[in-house]
Each structure stands twice: as C-alpha cells, then as structure tokens.
Amino acid sequence: MKPEKIFSVKERREIQNKIFQAIEAEMKTLSPEIQHILCDDLVTAFQNRLIVLTRVNQDTTEQWKETVLADTEQTYIRQV
Image (tube, rainbow, N blue to C red; front, side, top):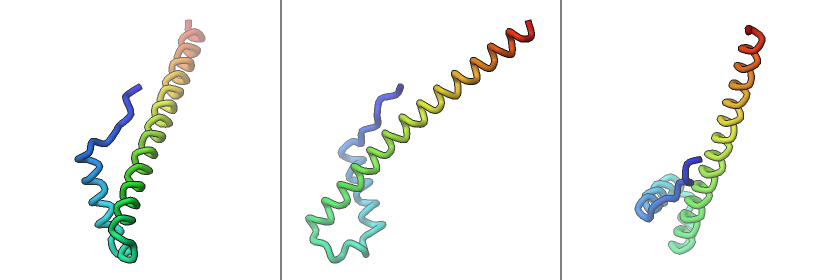
C-alpha cells in the first residue's frame, strides 16, 4: 500500500488559494479570518477524502486481482 498523500505547506497554500478563488463571491460576507479557516477546512476535507478513496480503490483493486487469480486457477484446473 502506498503511503497516504500529505500536502506540503506549499501545496496546501496553493489549494487554499484555488478554493478561495472558486468561492470568493460566496465568502465576501465572512471576515478574512473566517475565510482562511473555511479554506483550510476545505483543504483538510479534500485531503481526507483523497486518502479514503485511495484506500477504497486499493482494496477494490486487490479484491479484483484475487478474484481474477482464483477464477484463472479454477479454469486452469478444469482444463487439466
């Protein structure tokens, strides 16, 4: 299993800036401090979602491989 992706400080800032740009109009009523907190929370949520989906994808891939190997083995045994 690959190590979980943790955003570097630089990557985190870049993602926060992109999120801010995407929802800037909706956040105008919030104070700058709250805007920063919201963007940071969204980056954390995004990172956590990536970690979970990566695990699910790896588990699904491993299960699929096991199924294919078992099916292949059964087919080979029947042919012999």
